[in-house]
Image (cartoon, rainbow, N blue to C red):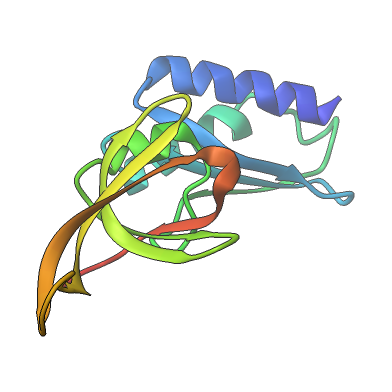
Length: 153
C-alpha cells in the first residue's frame, strides 16, 4: 500500500537526518502525497529536497502514479508535537485554552505539558495604582486548543 511505503521511506529519511521529524502526512484518493516536516534546528530547502528525493526515487511511477509535495511547518501553523514545543523554548507563544488566551514565554516543555511565564500589571492589594507581578501557567497538552510562536521584529 502506498501509505505504508511512504511512511517507511520517511522513517529512513529521518534516520539519515535525525533532527527532522514528521508533522503531517496526507495521501489523497488521487495519490497526491503531502508531507509536512519540521526540524530541531529548522528546515532548509535542502532538507525538503532530500526528503522529497528519498520518497520519489524509491517509488515506482509505473506501479502507482503520484504527485509529491514536501514542505516545512510554516511560522503561522500551530505547534502540534512536544518536540516542536521543546525547539521553541525561550520564545514567546500565543496559547489558547478553552478558558483563556495567554501570550507568554515558553520556559519548559516535557511529555506532560508546558510551562509559560509572563509579567502582568495588576491593581495593588492596598491603595491606588498597579504593580507588576510574575505569572506562570502550567498546561497539559490536552488543555491547549491552539499554540503559535509569536514573531517579533
